[in-house]
Each structure stands twice: as structure tokens, then as C-alpha cells.
Length: 114
Image (cartoon, rainbow, N blue to C red; front, side):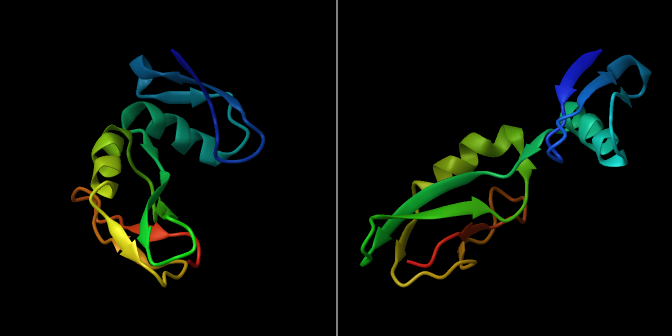
């Protein structure tokens, strides 16, 4: 049995996930907690935020994030990929910075007009 705090909504339910019983979840306040508990133990994912170098703008770095969640184990590779990127101003919110993070099909996108 593994204890997990659900982050899907502000309630922060304390979930218990039973790996030996087909990842049965208890302690949830809504159905989304069931999905989160199972996913967190079977294939945890995260939305990642960071910055990339920016040329020609007032600021030297532009904030970015993954457009969707990616597998937690890919975070180091995804962050390493950003070290190879340098944007040129102007940049708009939603501009694709990197179209495909490590074969996931998820892009890095800009989160600020620069």
C-alpha cells in the first residue's frame, strides 16, 4: 500500500493505492483521484516549466513549459534539450520552442510575450 496526496484539485485527498490489488485506490473525493492514484504509481507524469536563452529582447531568458505532461523519467533529457535552444525576439505566448520533446509528441511552448 502506497500513500499519495492527490494534486488534481485543491482538496488534496490522501489516497491509498494498493499495488497488490490491481492498483485499487481508496481515500479519493472524486473519480479523478482514482485515475491520478493509479497513474502516479504506474506511469507518473509531470508538466515542466523552465526558461530558455533569448536573443534581442529586454530579458535574457524566456519562460517555457511543456504543453502537456511528460513521463517523469524523461525530465532530465527534456531539460537537457532546452540547453541547446536559443530564441530570437519577438516571441509570443504559445509559440512552439521545441516541437517534440524526446519523441513524446509534446512540445515546449513559450509562456510569455518577449
